[in-house]
Image 1 (cartoon, one colour):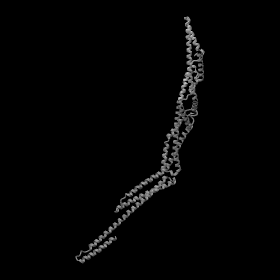
Image 2 (cartoon, one colour; image 1 turned 120 degrees about the horizontal axis):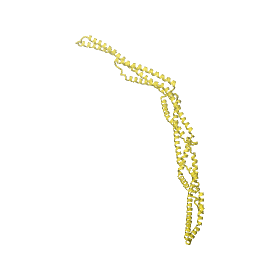
Image 3 (cartoon, rainbow, N blue to C red; image 1 turned 90 degrees about the vertical axis):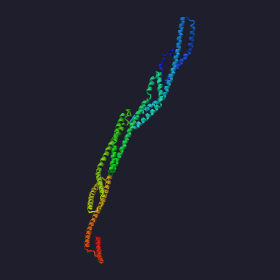
Image 4 (cartoon, one colour; image 1 turned 120 degrees about the vertical axis):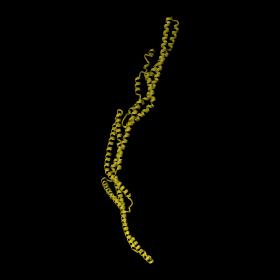
Length: 478
């Protein structure tokens, strides 16, 4: 019994971690307690007999016996105390070991599942793979957060068990190293989210560039399909606007190229993860840049070709606008002419002015006919260009306007010439009238003095009336 209860044989720091072993030791301790309890009667009898013998023994023998009894009592009480302490510690350790084993049994399948899911989380530049890994990482993070309290309890139970036990400590310590790292998982999730955000930015930017390049390509195809009908200033303006829109994409194209390179370089170097999609990403960036250069060159060629074709049209348009301005000046000049004069000098001056007007108008009409011929030639050569058709309609309208203006000038000249003829006739009639008046005055002077007799006066009055009637007839005839 002394050997079984010797602390040196069962030191406190040699307790196992497994509940089965602790229960075995607890059973041994309880059995030892029963055996010690069975010896309590013998111990109390020895103590009672020793006390009764003290009164009969000499002093020296009595002292030796007292010492023996005290030593026995001390050993007995110490043995009981150690057994009770060992039992208490075994029960406490058993409770902690059972708690640890219970938590371990509950968490072990989940921990294995976590390790399996954690192994499936792979950073990738393939959007589908990356999105799947990100969803798994988020789900695993939420699961870890929900089980955080249970994990803390597991960690506490493991630490407390390690404080009490020595045998099996390596196994518990090894298991503690495999506890899920929530902070590390959250960091990995954050990295995946950043990678996903940058990859999404690249994809959205690339699609935006492609849409604008497709719009420019469609504009070029429409331009080519329309042929001569697209040869207009409005078409050139639309192409120039599209060209500026495409040029504005250059910084974005460069940014996408740099972003793709950065994603390839910054992607975590994990087996089977970082290389997935990297080649596709770089190829997409190169393809976008190549398509940008292709569309830029194509639209530049279209603009240059259309600009050269419209240069001749622009020159004729400039001349026609000049003719229009000069024709408007002639119209204003005709409207500003003073009314038809009433004297020969004024009429002669007005006639010269109208003739000069008609001469300049004739030169302008000849110039307009030349431009109309050029326009017709370009229509035959270039086809039915909207600008050329509009230019031809404009020249035809100006020709009609010039014709009407010429008619008005001719009518004004006829008015002036008619007025000049009437003035000339008037001056001739005035001269003839003056001659007749002179002859009448001479006839009047040739008559004698007025008589005093009534019959003579009547005779003279009759002759005067006859002469006056003849003068009136002559004037009326003139």
